[in-house]
Image (tube, rainbow, N blue to C red; front, side, top):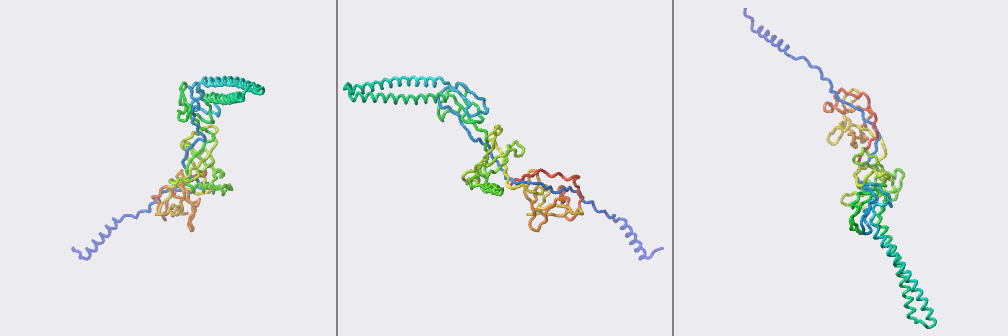
Length: 400
């Protein structure tokens, strides 16, 4: 039996509708929010510092040379040892100088005998002149001979002193206390007197030690103003009266273990660099610091104050603005614009007070520190919070 055409079309349409309904996929559920790591800002005390590079120098440096000519007979020091002022260091052969002293002493005896004879002759002729037995010329000559011998005797006394000094100079002593270098000439060498002759050794003082470095003039004025706020008033230009303390350390030291006080600033600014040379001084009775060593220096430029720190990796940029991603009470990501400060050595960034009308960061805020690329503003996240809040760090140090 043939069915009517309209009925067949209705059946076909129904079958197509059933087929298309079977192919429709089931609705998918919403993906879970991404996991991110969060942390609170760290509250700590901080002091701002200026940092410089400098070098150590000795207060006194002496190049030891011989003052008389002679052969080195004995060296009385060990290379590199600490010596005191007046210690015997090098001894030259003293025999030529002892002979010179003895010769001048004998010559003095000859002049003394001749002077006695001349004085007696002068007295005898003056006696004869009163009786007409001697002329005036004879008396004058006798008087001149006596005065000449007296002058020679006095000159000989000076020669004895000079010969005695040469004998004294044959024993070379330390003019200062400090650390001595190695002996540049060995025993048996002939040394000459004079500034161009070879150096025997060098001595540098060790206590106190000086620290030199260059700062710009404005920084130096800022240091003095900071001391003035602390109640220390000084006359202009006299940096020593300011008693500005600095910290410094060697390249191998951890931190800045040494403390010194500024005591000198040069009298002019270097036009080529715009800096001025300054010096600090520190007692070093044990001589543990070596002149010429490179040092790292920092100078406080502010009082200790409270700051908030965040990891620098958590700070994002939007053109000229810096911001953090923080969570609200529903774990929804929000943007918080900040006023960033200095970057510290440990990778933390100081957050300064916001500009007028801005929102300040709070120690209770949860900041996204890891997983920033998965967080989207106004969308929820699954925060992974630390089990315990990190302990407050030690007072931080910020370099300018």
